[in-house]
Length: 310
Ligand SMILES: [Fe+2]
Image 1 (cartoon, rainbow, N blue to C red):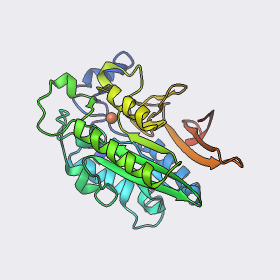
Image 2: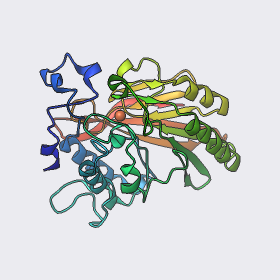
Image 3: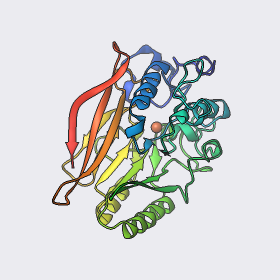
Image 4: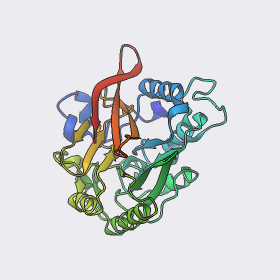
C-alpha cells in the first residue's frame, strides 16, 4: 500500500542523470524515487544464505523514500523488525532485522527529506532507527572484530542540516561537507586509530567524494573529505547515493560507489558487495571488495567478476 501511495512513476532527484531515458522522468520534480521490492527480496534471500559468515551489514543510506513517517515506517520494518527471527515475514516481505546481523547504517538525503519537495533537515530518521543509529555530531564509530583482526567502520552524515536556505535545484540530490561533522570525523578516526594501531579504517558515507559525480548529485566541498582521508591515512571510502557502481582506485583514498540495491529507477544496476579483511603469513593486511549483481532473469544476486584488492 505504501508503494502505491508513493506514486513510483514519479521520481525526484534523479532527473539530472536519467532525463533522456524515460518519459516518466518528466515527473521527476514531483516525487522522490522509491524502491523495487523484487530485488530487495533477492537481497534479503542472499543475506539469509550467508548470514552466518557476515559480521556486519553496512547500509549506505536512502533506506526510506523520504523522512516522513509513512516512509520511515516501511524502512524501519524492512531493516529492524526482527520478530520473526527470519529474513521474511508471513507475507514474504523482507525483514532484515530477523537475520541477526549487526548493522551499521548511514542516513541518506532521502531519509532526511521532510516532504515530497526534498526539504532537507528531517530528524525523524534518528528516532525510527535510534536502536542502531547512535551518532555523535553526525558521526558513528564501529569496530568489526574477528580474532586478531579489526576493521573500523566510521560513518558521517553530510546531508543538509535543518534550516538551511537552499535553492530548490541545489537541495535535490546534493549534500555538503559540514565542518562540525568533518571535525568529528577527524576526531573519531584518530581515536579509533590510536586504540587499534595498524588496523584499517573504512569511512562509510552516503555521498560520494569521487571524481566525475554529476552536478546534481555532488557532495559540495568534497575535497575536504579526500584531503582529510589522505592526512589520516584512511585508504578506503564506501559510499552510495549515485546509483552507479563505480570504483576510483589507484589514487588515495580508494572510493567505492556501491550502486543501488533496489532503487526503482536503477533497473539493471543493483549491487551487493562483500568486503573481507585477511592477513598473510607476513602480517600483510589485505582488504578485498567483491561485487554481486542482481540478475533480472534469475531474480537473484550473482557474483560479478570484478574484485579489487587493496
Ligand atoms: Fe541519496
